Length: 330
Ligand SMILES: Nc1nc2c(ncn2[C@@H]2O[C@H](COP(=O)(O)OP(=O)(O)OP(=O)(O)O)[C@@H](O)[C@H]2O)c(=O)[nH]1
Ligand SMILES: [Mg+2]
Image 1 (spheres, rainbow, N blue to C red):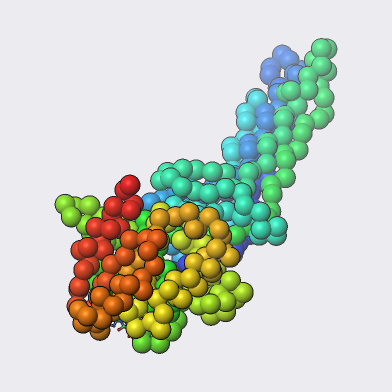
Image 2 (image 1 turned 180 degrees about the vertical axis):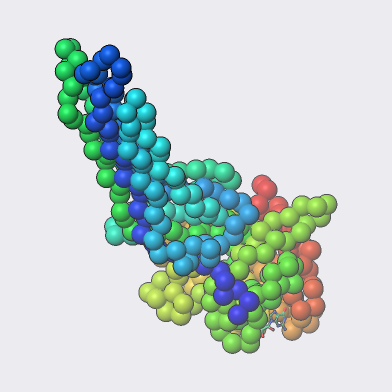
């Protein structure tokens, strides 16, 4: 499968470095038989950090990383020398990556910008050296702090696609065919339901060097919200899309019914999805003649802009792009 490299979920154990121990050390100089304490502080343990990288589109590069471990800080030394910090581990992730606590499922943060860095698992603080524990009499304390322990935790990263327009339709509606005909994406196409098992993204060029990103997701059927078919877990990928392109094939038994079912499943998943702008494309229009098209037009829901298209004969694809562009930018 061309798109089997699409990884939108990874789970790993993230372990930050422990802080280095503070040093217990006493100044030794000629003629100063009993120097004061001069033990330096321990270094900070390495953080595990996520950094947004707009050149990454998947989490594939993290798929086999089961343990991510940062170095511990070095111990402090005499002469008030602070130990070196443990090296941070920086994981580059695509924009739209959500970090969650794997045990509770609780969301920590989301990476949305190129170069954005967020500490996922902070390294332990370094311990203070005995230099900090001097007494007035300069009596040497034989005491320094140990470094703070590192943290070990299980983390889930999930990727939400950042597309301008998300395709919503029953299996076999022609979603992948459309994406492949107007972008360089090459999703698998088949005359059977659920050909698409993972989302695909494509960049669609529009007039004068403009472009927008379209997401093709697996088909949705009635009962998807209850787990039928591939379920609705892929709908999380369109939560961030700015508009939704509904696709219903011209040979659907009832356009109204399919539209209603799709809306219903979206609403059950997340009612806010219904606040997004919608466009309707009646696909496979190459199967219709002019008269049939006129007849069908009466059947089309009236609460959204619609267009007949055919990815196979390239019919009305420019008109569709115009509608999409207008919806994205108004
Ligand atoms: N006649 C005609 N057939 C089309 C057109 N677009 C797609 N098809 C056919 O419809 C079938 C399904 O196409 P896909 O693009 O795989 O449909 P999909 O919506 O991505 O399906 P799932 O991935 O299963 O959800 C294939 O046999 C396509 O060749 C079209 O414009 N005209
Ligand atoms: Mg498909």
